[in-house]
Image 1 (cartoon, rainbow over the protein chains, first blue to last red):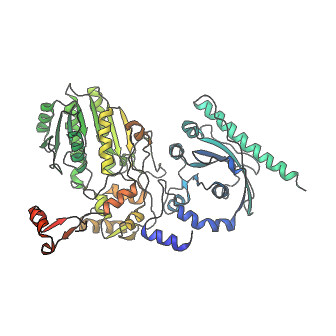
Image 2: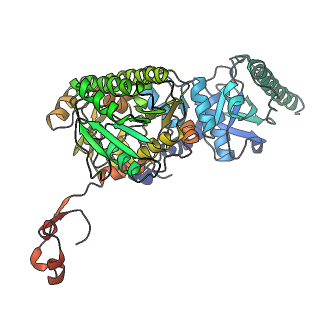
Image 3: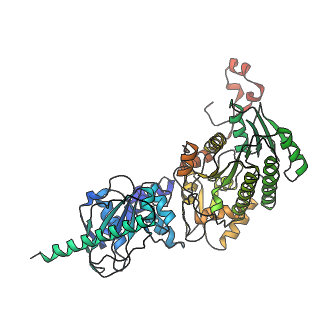
Length: 209
Length: 340
């Protein structure tokens, strides 16, 4: 998007804004700047559903770069925006965050996003590099309730580095039953999927000359 | 079906009346309100009654012996009535009309107009709450709606009938008395300098269709009815070609006073919409009512600004036969912006 088009649409009010505040024009405007800081190499991005709702369960270390890396990698590979929970709901941070795709971290908000067919990034707890952190046993209840795909994603890179790799796993099969135990099983399977991807990334690096 | 319709004098109430008049399943419609209907109602009967006049309202209800109540008699602050009396009127209307109807053995369903303002916008709350989210109203209008819902639920329990509570997104339009509509049509509009949150609206035709659907469905429960899409305050103001004035902190006090001075008072729930946003998930409403609103929020904003203006015609230049056949009221000028 060129600056002229951006400015004209801003002035006449025709820029697109969705119900959660995502502003596609602002995202397109800052994308080149994001590219200067992070270079993302996506592996198997075709495993992200082309349409319909999905939860992208991913690892994080500090959690500063990971949401941006995930959103940029998936958007470049599939053209779909990723919603990031964890919005600080205080202006003007909330205003900018919403424009870029952040949402408040609440189960009902995530359920609404999935019901509307969006991609939602769900971070595991902070942990050491190459280790899948913990995840609350009920965290994937919105995915089970809406029938959304659960896709494990590994993010490999360092906070001070520019190069990151994004590895997408096969979607995790939903358990047969419903209820809290089924959600806990789904969470365990998603975590195991992320850890397997991280292990495979480590093995791949070990095999390099 | 014999229908008691409160709030018939509002734009929505009059439109719903017209739809029910064309409905073969409806044998009688009786309306009550503080204002007369805003259009012709060939079939329905209307009683101009102040809801605080309990005896008269009860007499009208008992005389009809309704099988259904459509309660649209909720009064948004600074819309049709001043903010200071809106809550009293809304609560009196719900108490008297629903309470009296609940005492009629003929009653078999209740439909109540509420609003998504009832959810409130607490910090960290959901941007698009669904019906499972417990209401936490944060403005006087939201608290009024919560009390109306409570009275409706009590009446439904007392009469042992289903009650459908419709939480409508703000309904604005060129002919609807609404503080948000008046505010957005100001030539220069105060908007937050630091927040530009999305909000969703509902077209009055979609709102009226939802009320009629709910009346026929007769389901017991609460549903959100929200137009698709969203706009931000800055965007809405620019879509209308108005000038946005960035406002911050105490500046809102001045903005509020200025708006009130020019006839567009800003009640708390409108300021909340402008600074915190307003939305709700209408998926369940579409499923339960079997119809989703078709006009988007952007369409509603465009409609709001396409307000017909008075166009003066030069009578001397009109063809003779047209002038002769024209009705007297159209001979000198007419309302509308169409090419003449």
